[in-house]
Image (cartoon, rainbow, N blue to C red; front, side):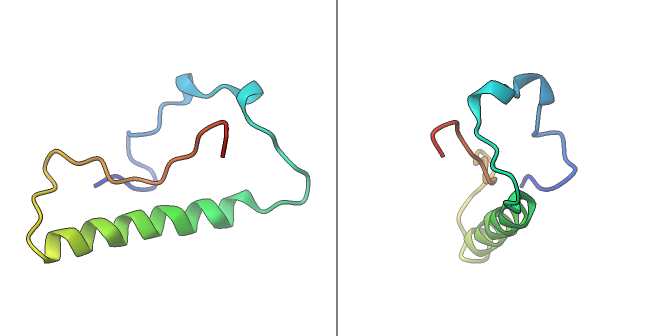
Length: 65
């Protein structure tokens, strides 16, 4: 599984011009919730016996939202 602080995020791929930042929007709370939800999904899949060895379960965002 991937989580906060792991090596799955590559800052070299970040394009600041591809995103829209709005002042006073708390982006980090939403990102933490999405990361936690991805971790919980991974745990639930493992608990029911799904082989997640080849899966990449992580929070993600794209330029289009």
